[in-house]
Image (cartoon, rainbow, N blue to C red; front, side):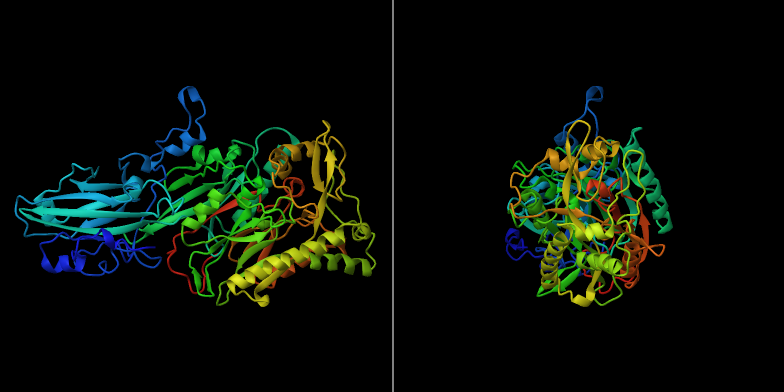
Length: 640
């Protein structure tokens, strides 16, 4: 980022000011240790510039510490999305209590004990004033600095403390690069001196899997129907797995809008700076998906926003290339790395695009993510997936290696080998799936022989394997990961076929899954599955005619949740049972155990799998974001 040196007056830098003793001298926490040094020189160098490694940081004060923001209008009428987003702690010029004060970045003036009684001082934000507020601490209270604010000689003699907040995150560096330049001017008789410091708003960063899981989020669908009851049973089972993994904080449940895809309508992110006590001041920021017709995102404002939790939503007026690509299940984060002359100390975002049709995620969202300056999004090809999300085939896992992490990837060839080996050993007539049926939905009937004889299954998985290999080559080139650092997890994909509800609606389901017309489950998939969103938001840019799109046939094991550094929760496989053991469960467990992970399984067949997703798609996590984002950890042995 360009330095702000041009705003300084002549040679009036801080070092000169400190030496002369009679000149204005303003200091900020340039070295990010949580202390503004007004007696030494540790915060002098670089005070008029900013880089990833050095420079004063201030927070976008977009939380609601005192829960003062309304969530309904007069008479309980719902507020618009814009009205919900308009209120936060940075939307007024007040410091709303002690918690709000903790979100202010401190700036101090160096004491000038020799000033005469008629000396005065003034303060202004010389650059970035439209996006920031400046406060003065006077008589123990924070008051807003205005054009009429004057500092007394007594205040200047003892030194003054100021607080700075941003009113928003950086959304587009072409419009605002996040800088605020604060200038102090001191007038003493005929002598006028000034000094300035530059701060840059903390980047909005997504979480990665080297950060400890602190809390798990999931939707809890209300209602008395069988589909709703099944989903709540999933929540109960999830809660037990979370406790077993050692996570003591209760689940965050979304209960207002019956959107079960908790991974898709929000991406938990964070901003942070070093606070006045030397501790990291972290604000969680719920990044709402760029899907304004997805009402579940409103619950982030209505129930989740509060103390140290803010919400960001983007407004993209353009027709989406492909609505599903804007779901946050299509956003994952590579853990920190450096390779090829580029460093990503806070990790790097990956997103899926459809290269076959040219469809990409929301440009406004991609601009926001790129404008943070640290996690430059890398696009992978998800043309071959019906839903089109990167979490359907790739994940990142902690590792006790110099890099600190590995790539986990779905391996369709390994899935085909499991079936072929079982057939070779005389188990071809074994049922492909061991999942029990329901009263309105019989269990799948196909056998291993029938699956392998399908005119599409083998071809679909060979195609999926080629597509995954091409994406792996991109990841290897960009990160330097080697084949030895890749965990290959057995998987199978299948193209979809249409089933019909009682009303005649076509519902895409995995091709070899048999369901009776009008079953309650099919109605549920049409109302709550990914099928609902795909039907309501068809892509204007259709996939190329030759493109076969697929979803998981056997529940996608890589589409699970990392609950701890060594604890992984995968969707129950429900594969063929040979010799009393599920061959997919055995193979998936072995793949993860080889790299030190203990695997648990949760049943998501009827709740998420047949809805074209898995446990990861239906959950989200809040992770420990207290590490310094400007320093790449060497080896993350204590984080997951």
